Length: 507
Ligand code: GDG
Image 1 (cartoon, rainbow, N blue to C red):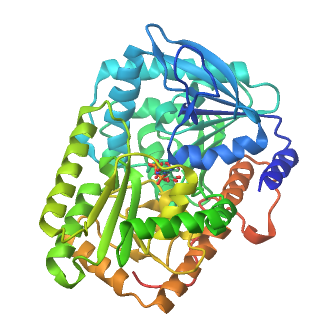
Image 2 (cartoon, rainbow, N blue to C red; image 1 turned 90 degrees about the horizontal axis):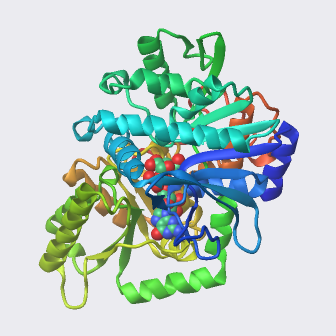
Image 3 (cartoon, rainbow, N blue to C red; image 1 turned 90 degrees about the vertical axis):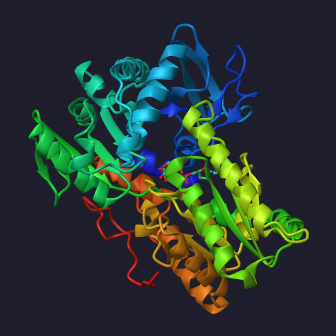
């Protein structure tokens, strides 16, 4: 994988990669930015991007978890400790910026709005001003890091103004922007008081990319209506202020080989067997996600409760294991969500535990990578039921880790990944009766059918992997990128339908 990514970079003539995201993959602790004592950030963005930055080298600009009285540029640290592959350029936020830019604007306004939870979005003008200031700091840091032939690659909704700011400051090199979350329809986006500023910011890029064709269409429509720009839905571009920007749908892939190999290791198999012995159950149903309202954990627990009420034969035989990764823990509404989840787990266990059997096991922490893959292997079923999710990598990782070829993926159609993962069992996460029914269907599914479905899913996840995605980014920027025989499909303007396998099984 690494060699191939490196070859693609050489072929494109890319000399320096500067990645910008709100958070870096490392969280620094204490006074000094020290790679040896840093901890890892858990997020889909980090999982997806880090293998590329490890292979290409370059600089990753972002917040590494430290705040101070005054914001400033922090450390420049080569990571990982002992075998450095790239540099983290730390931005230290002031406490005010942390509260306003990060929580007030990014978490409380843009995150709910882009996920279509309009009623949760808070529009605070002071927070917006802070967002503008922090975006400027990121833009300045990026300019300092980028030399000749560089690509500045900006990620996610926290930094939407950066491309436009770079252009305004006279930067002429290539800029790409990737949005990891959904892009909302015009009717929702129009509620944002600073919508035009966000669009102007994004259009500083040469390439703006989203996971799905539907998000691309929403974006083009918004640009057309709010800015009056010329757009092409067929060829995927925007013409505006004498510049042409390409807009693509490029759903992120995972490093399939890494998950496959890790899952096959003896140590992982041994650990998976150990997990099964500990849980001591006939059937194990797994969920893994950050504790966030978009992930639908409450609704899923309601479905589990309904399942146990409706199908008494399964009581004492099925265990649901919920791994909830701590996220935005200092935000009151997230703390409230955690209390509600824990209260529901307690209630379900209180009602349905029998003997030593607990129907729901719950963990509020992150697992390390091997442990995560061991859990993917140990489970019979993965329940991935977000209310709305840009893509969802957990679903893909579960599929890649099923090295015995069995298992069932129960998936919400509101996860972007559902467009690619056609062998999954689709469920409406808002409907507890459907959830209960699909859990039963998954438990009753014959192994032969499981194997057909997993094999279809694996073909798709393997083919549209991380290399495919990176090649799509490079070619979207007009660079020749080397195809790999395994995933040689091109990436058209909207890539619509291209990544949807022909074989289908009904959910
Ligand atoms: C955003 C978008 C989009 C989870 N628990 C543990 C752990 N993880 C890793 C998984 C996976 C990642 O975190 C989660 O990625 P998701 O894609 O599921 O979700 P978000 O964090 O919300 O990601 C999402 C993604 O960006 C990429 O564009 O798909 O829609 O919301 O990789 O493996 N990793 C470890 N221990 C855990 O306990 N080590």
